[in-house]
Image 1 (cartoon, helix red, strand yellow):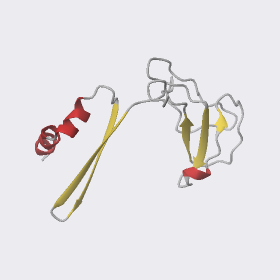
Image 2 (tube, rainbow, N blue to C red):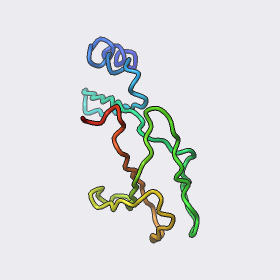
Image 3 (tube, helix red, strand yellow):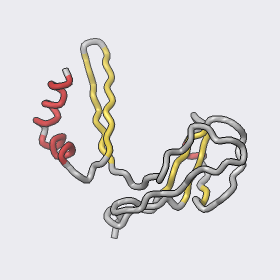
Length: 125
């Protein structure tokens, strides 16, 4: 089945172009089956920024998050970030300056969202 799927992607001009495009550095594949139907989605993206080190899964009270970012061609440094409890709508995330050294939150599980300026290559004139 996997060979048939990849062959189908390669036989489609648009899918083949996406697969061979070096500007895409990251991708994900999702599949859903219902009865005898299989739907597969392939999402392509490019990394806009990268942390210098992984974030810890748990943070102790008073600990600092390592929010240093890699620099390099095609990468931008986030200027703001936001955090939300799991399941909280992203529209409710309040952007905070990355340089902010102290944020107090209640214990719990959170997700982080980083906000970058558009890179020069993708910015509109």
